[in-house]
Amino acid sequence: MALPYLEAVLCFMILNYIFETYLNIRQHRALKLPTLPKSLAGVISDEKFEKARAYSLDKSNFNFVREAITIVFDITILYYKVLPWVWQKSGELATNVGLNAENEIIHTLAFLAVVMVWSQITDLPFSLYSTFVIEARHGFNKQTIWLFIRDMIKGIFLSIVLAPPIVAAIIIIVQNGGPYLAIYLWGFMFALALLMMTIYPIMIAPLFNKFTPLPEGSLREKIEKLADSLKFPLKKLFVVDGSTRSSHSNAYMYGFFKNKRIVLYDTLIQQCTNDNEVVSVLAHELGHWKLNHTTYSFVAVQLLTFMQFGGYTLVRNSKDLFESFGFDDQPVIIGLIIFMHTIIPVQHVLSFCLNLVSRAFEFQADAFAKNLGYAPELRGALVKLQEENLSAMNTDPWYSAYHYSHPPLVERLSALEDLDSKKEN
Image 1 (cartoon, one colour):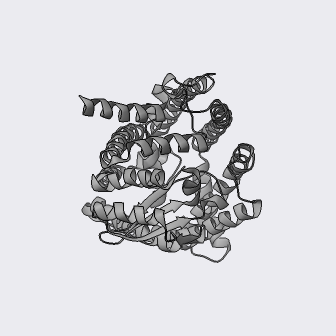
Image 2 (cartoon, one colour; image 1 turned 90 degrees about the vertical axis):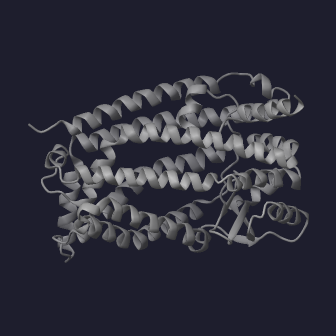
Image 3 (tube, one colour; image 1 turned 135 degrees about the horizontal axis):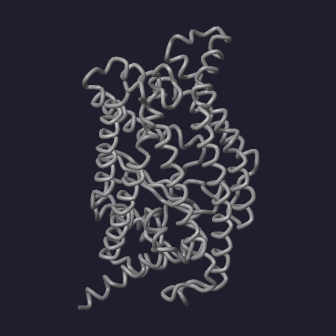
C-alpha cells in the first residue's frame, strides 16, 4: 500500500497556514496599538508613528488576503493533481510546435514555461495592488506603470536566457550522477552561486538601476577612511538610483577577495541627517565583513544545500512518492518539486534557526559600529531610517522571532544602551 505522502504534505500546509495566521493576528493586534513603545516615546514623532501604523496595517490586511488566496491555490493544485495535467499538456504543446517531447530537457522547459506564465498571471494582481495602491498611498512608490511593465519584461527575458542551461545541467547531472549525485549537484549549485554573485552586480543589476560613482566630497572621504582603517579592500563606491522606483533605502557590499564594492541607495543619503549617519550605517555593514558573518552565512547555506541534495538522492527513485502526487513517470524537475514540498517542515525549522543567527549577527554588527565610535550616529540613523521607511513600531515578540531576520528597533536601541551601561561599569 502506497504511503499517503500527498495527504501528509497537505496536512502540514494547512497546519502551517493556521500557525502563521495566528502569528499574523498577533502582529496585527500589536500594530493596532495606539501608542508607541515606552522606549520610543519622545524618540519617534507622533506624526511618523501614525503614518507607520497606517502603512503597517494596510500591509497586514493585504497579507491576510494574499496568504488566504495563496493557500487555496496551492492546496487545489496539489489535491486535484494539476501538476501532472500541466506536465502532460506541456509535452503535447512541445510536440505541437515540432519539438521532441521525449527529450526530458525539452519537456521540462515547456513545463516551466507554462508554470512561469501561470505565475505571472496569478502574481500580477498582487504586485500591482502592492505597488500602485499600498506603496503609492503611503508615498513610497515612484515608478510608473510603464517602468513596472519594463522591469517585468526584463525579468521574463532573463528567465528565458538563464533557465535553459541551468535546467539542462541539473537534469544531465541527475541522470548521470550515480552514487555521487549529491556531491555533483552541490558542486554545480556552488559554482552557479559564485557565478551569479559575480555577474549579477555587473551585468544584471544595471539592467534595472543606474549605478554611478559616489562624487568626490566629505562623504566619500569618510567612507574611504573608514574602509582603510579596517583594511577593507574597497575598489569602487557607487550610488544607485533606488528613488526611481521607491523611497525605501538600503546599502550593501559585494565582491570577492581584494575587489570589494559598496553601493549606497540615493534614498539613504537623502534620508540621513548628515554624512556621519551614512558612515555609521556602513560601519555596521563593514562589521558583518570584519566579523566574517557573510562567510559564515554562505557556508551555512552551502551545508544546508548539500544536506537537501543528500535527502533528494534518497527519495528521487521512490515510485510511491511520485504516484502519490499523481505522476506515473519520474521526471527530474518533478522529483525536485515534490521533494521540496515534502521537506517543508524541515525548511521552516531551519529558516527559524537561520533567523536567530542573523539577529545575533545584527547585534554584533551594531556593537562593532559602536566600538568604532559611531554609537550616537548609528542610533540617529536607525531612528531616521525607521521613520522614513515607516517600519512597524510595535511588534509582537512571537511574530518577530519567527519572521524577522533583523531585530526590531526597540531591541537594537536597547542593546546599544546595554553596551553603554557595561562600559560605564
